[in-house]
Length: 168
Image (cartoon, rainbow, N blue to C red; front, side, top):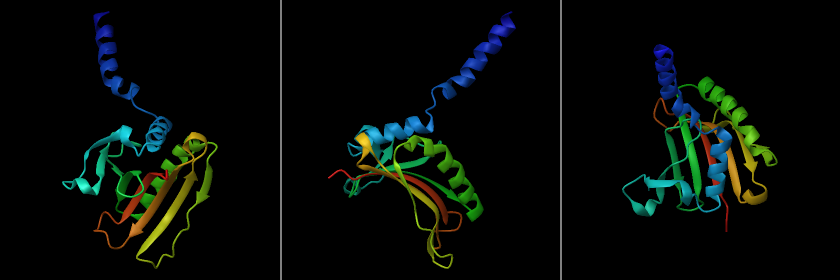
């Protein structure tokens, strides 16, 4: 009996972090709610040594991304970024994450982003935008898989999920 209790205790300790994990839609809602206030509610420490850059770490993440930042310099935006070595990898990640996050935007207008010519040094490989509605009509989301020949090797393919606050 003691061994069963010990196993259940260990299982509880191992699974507790997952029980507290946010679903993508919970995180999107958190980002949206904060977005109508310049993302102040999820703003962390400065991400650079220059305060005038208005670039901050984010306390909200999507799909466990390690690189989520808030840029408040011009149009406030919250972005999470993943980098890949190959086009097939970024396109697969885009398809997976875009499908998982799409239900979070029920009632929002979806627009496909234009895919660029393969000969361009920068090009969008896949992308979608969501135009906010209701309480979030000032929020626009962009989900973009892109390639930039100017980035260093291993970082040329990137997936970004960005919420932009267009409050006047």
